[in-house]
Structure formats: structure tokens, C-alpha cells
Image 1 (cartoon, rainbow, N blue to C red):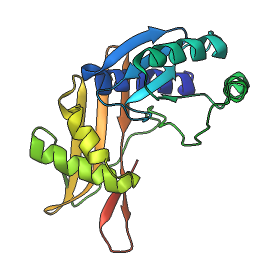
Image 2 (cartoon, rainbow, N blue to C red; image 1 turned 45 degrees about the horizontal axis):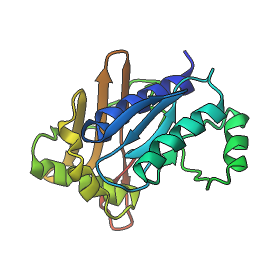
Image 3 (cartoon, helix red, strand yellow; image 1 turned 180 degrees about the vertical axis):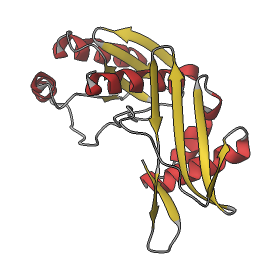
Image 4 (spheres, rainbow, N blue to C red; image 1 turned 90 degrees about the vertical axis):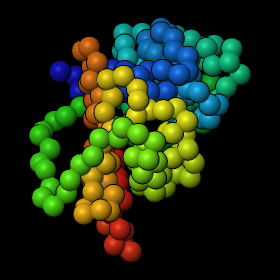
Length: 202
């Protein structure tokens, strides 16, 4: 299995199922483009993801730019670091690079449960708010909780969101996704801050 390709296939499926569910999704040459419900440049809301390495970087870029230009929207374009043609094409077009790595979205080994923690499925507005707050603090991105609530990700099909509690204190979060031949997980790790509160690191 090509782990990198499996990861992008899973990532594309995950973004389609969440942001794309109440946004706009299209297949483009070499991948998928997803325009979410709000016009913010975000790699999980307004994004183009390559899924077919046999298609040229130029064709993928052309279709992605055309799709988002039609919507008059800024977007993030994922580019595999293992393929130098993507970096060269991005440089040729004077695109602004962002070195944030994509999640592998592929399980390489079983995850061991941590004793003392209990999990709760996100299934209502209250638990969704807790999940969003954990992610916003963990990613250190203000506004992320609002964005997640706005796109109603926890009610997306084939997607399961969980919160880990230490007693009554929410300390971490994770999402699992499975649809057809694609599946993914974005588990968090418990990372105590200097104040002693657990925050998720995805």
C-alpha cells in the first residue's frame, strides 16, 4: 500500500463528508476540490486535494484554480512533498507556500487505550461545542470552534467525533471516518500544558 496516496484519498473523503456536505464538491483532474459553507482559506474547508499521482501537477492546479475562481474564493491546495513537480508548479505560479503537514490519515498500528479516561460520542450541540473548544485550543487557531459548529461536522455521514474526559474534565478529542473504500482517523494525544490542563495535539 502506498501510505501517502492512501492518506490523501482518505483526507479527500473526510473533507467531502464534512465541509463538502453543506458546501460544494467537484472532481477535478487528479483530485477533488471542496468549497465549504464559509469563505475562509482553510485546508479542511476550502481545499483541493490530489488523489491521482498519474495526473500532472499543471492539470491539477489548473482545474483547482478554475473551480475556486468561479466561486471568487481563496483556497488551500495540498501538494505532495514527494513529487517535486508540484513544488515547481507552485513556484511557477507564485503561490504562497504553507509548510503545515497533512495528517497521514492511515493507521499504522493499533491505538492503546489510556486508563482513567472515558469517551463520549459527540451527538448534540453541547458536546459539539466542547469538541470545538478542545480543537481550537489544541490547534491554537481562534475561530475554529465556530467554524466546526457552523459546518455541523459532527452530524456528517460516516463520521464519528469523540471527546475523552478525565473525570468530568474534557481533555482530548478525536474523529474517525469510514465510507466505502476510504477511512481515516485523526486521534489526539494528551499533552499537558504548563497550567496542567490537557490539550489535544492532532
